[in-house]
Image 1 (spheres, rainbow, N blue to C red):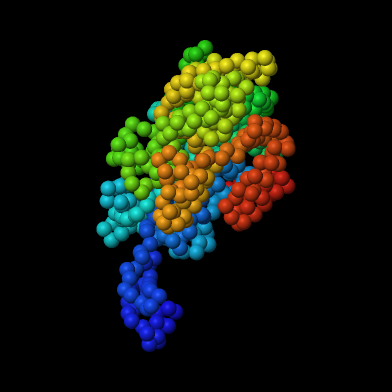
Image 2 (tube, protein in one colour; image 1 turned 30 degrees about the vertical axis):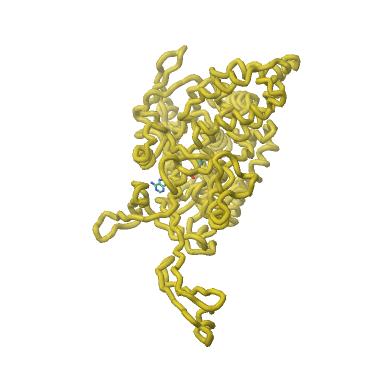
Amino acid sequence: DRASRALKDPTFTKLVVVFAVSGGGLVAYADSKSDGYESSQVPTKKKVVVLGTGWAGMSFLKTVDSSLYDVQVVSPRNYFAFTPLLPSVTCGTVEPRSIAEPIRNIIRKKKGDIKFWEAECFKIDAKSKKVHCRSNVGTNLDGTGEFEVEYDYLVIAVGARPNTFNTPGVAENCHFLKQILHIFVQEIEDAQRIQKAALPNLNEEERRKTLHFIVIGGGPTGVEFAAELHDFVTEDLAKLYPNIQDLVKISLIEAGGHILTMFDKRITEFAEDKFQRDGIDVKTNFKVVKVSDKAITMTNPSTGEISVPYGMAVWSAGIGTRPIILDFMKEIGQAGRRVLATDEWLRVLGCNDVYALGDCGTINQRKVLEDVSAIFQKADRKNSGKLTVKELKVVFDDIFERYPQLELYLKSKHMKDVSDLLKDSDSNPGTESIELDIERLKKALSNVDSQVKMLPPTAQVAAQQGTYLAQCFNKMKERDENPEGPPRIRETGRHRFRPFRYRHLGQFAPLGGEQTAAQLPGDWISIGHSSQWLWYSVYASKQVSWRTRFLVVSDWMRRFIFGRDSSRM
Ligand code: FAD
């Protein structure tokens, strides 16, 4: 418009139309000064490359203003999977397709053009600002399917992989809930296994072994899967195969002293009691040391080593680092770490313009301890260097809301006396006035393993980080003009953006039988049927599109009316 007006304008002095290749097309560009037009460079958009289409990558893409950047996404998965509903998929409560949103549906709705490459990134070259990728869907003329993508900013959101802790036989013989494709396979295998167990040619012992399901890992995912499996057996299998229902056994193996240790003690106790009533065999203090195709070997301080025959084993015992991240950490001087260390603006330490979000990154421990120290100091209004137990409770609430992982640390041996005092004070208010030395508390906390992920590896953290970083990118230009930012965010080491702050919105643990435990901010605990309805509403509202929301809710209704669908066409 401007160009054509300028061409017709007799006072026209200069017009330069620059053609540049941008966003896959030719762009004509003209610039003007008040008295006419003068030559100008095309302001090429900065290239933002996002690795991964999980929680962190998806929420970044949903929020980023793609008209400001040349955004490219690389992921071997062309869909986003709503992982919290994966355990429901395994037993047919929810259909796999209902929790998967094609990534193209998400980027189609954006103002600017976002390119998606269905490929796996196998090397990050931070020096030449390139990522090396291997296509998932075909090969180049050279037959390798490999290509490079250059970036100005790189957002690493590749998540984590299951951690087998190098236990022999786990990778070969266990299923992993993490991999949705495994689950499609697993479902078919489950169905076949059950049908096989119903065949007349097996004796009872063989049937029992075939129908022994072992879940390894008593965290929220393992617990939810065991509960879902139990519901499937009692509600659906009992009707379909009444003769084998009593032969099914579900065991939940946990290396620690309790299941659901990241939850409040009341929830842990309720879950353990409920599982016992339901007939789920919860084995705590059992460490799996070997898995063969027939039996799982585990050790326990009192029983020693035992081997248990099984039909199907599901491994849900923790997460590990992806090889690409291990290689990258070596390159940037972070070798030996378990996750990429970032600052509170999520910038990877040791390189420029690279950010890490979600399960593959963690905020640097030193900064966390500085934060914690500042919270202690602020609470010490009298400047006495001491805090009463009563004051400490408020301080810890503040700290744990920001860094929930430290709550686990409070339960460890370094802080045992403090946690005992806090527990005592609930039943004995007299102890609330006992004073504790701040320096000693800080010292105890500084023993936190520097490898510990300071924020939990959850969808909640990953999604909040993705949204935060995209908001920073959207304001980058504005902040470039005002680099020091508004005074309220001028913290130590001034920065253009406020640092990332996690807001813990609570967590759920579905326990089966339409009962869920909910732990919400402010130590609000709710267990039972009402929390199950809260769970349904939260998970329906958190769906990434109306399409998946509709599909998930209709799956739940189908299940209520007709039961789970265990058949496979
Ligand atoms: P992911 O969501 O795992 O995404 C990683 C992405 O990177 C994927 O798209 C993957 O394809 C891609 N990728 C991998 N390698 C490469 C590569 N080399 N190059 C490019 N792309 C790559 N959290 C909760 O808060 N609540 C829950 O109820 C809950 N339930 C869960 C149940 C299960 C069964 C599982 C497995 C996890 C659950 N979680 C839950 C945890 C949650 O899913 C993770 O914390 C979250 O997915 C982390 O997000 P992310 O973006 O970091 O990684």
